[in-house]
Length: 248
Ligand SMILES: Nc1ncnc2c1ncn2[C@@H]1O[C@H](COP(=O)(O)OP(=O)(O)O)[C@@H](O)[C@H]1O
Ligand SMILES: [Mg+2]
Image (spheres, rainbow, N blue to C red):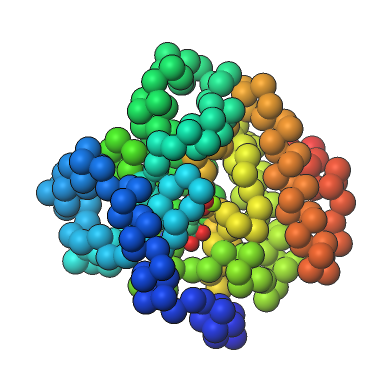
């Protein structure tokens, strides 16, 4: 049932491909990026880069193929608005204090941060794509999809079981909090829907609890979830949910 709904709403792969191809090629593939991608192919991270799944605001995500299946490859861009946004989440985080003046270093660090955040979250038992490799501005991670077709976002496909999905997402947010990390951009746009439950994605901006705004980001994340799921018939109180996440 869930599968047929999400399939129906999914755009046709070739349509996505044609619209996004020319845009992504000029924006993403500068020489150093090509070089890093070639290195990944040599290492066997993947064999071919198939097509862009999405051209997002700060990165392009591609499906790539290996002999054993698929991999998702996220390539960050270095445009000015992107860098401005990245600063907001890196300031106050001691892991990045020495590099904030250099835009290429910021972008690399951002990709590294997404990779490390994925590691922490995956180790904490959250439903996030398993990290595979990070080089320069590129993060390779587990491909989330069915028979080569990426899962749709919660925004695109909705939830067939809002109560269950809300609880699963909140459990994951609690696991993250226990692992001292906050997603910081959680919404229906950054959740992919599988029949067995939702996955959290797009974790580059996630911050440690030591970040001065960590508590504000957490409140905002939970607020987004509560708003979305209330709209879909789930009874939820923001303060109660925040308490639950914090294990209180
Ligand atoms: N691991 C993945 N497997 C399959 N598709 C993915 C994966 N990660 C991202 N995507 C696709 O790429 C889109 C953009 O990814 P996201 O990480 O949210 O980037 P952005 O920073 O551009 O918002 C997602 O909405 C989803 O369609
Ligand atoms: Mg996103």
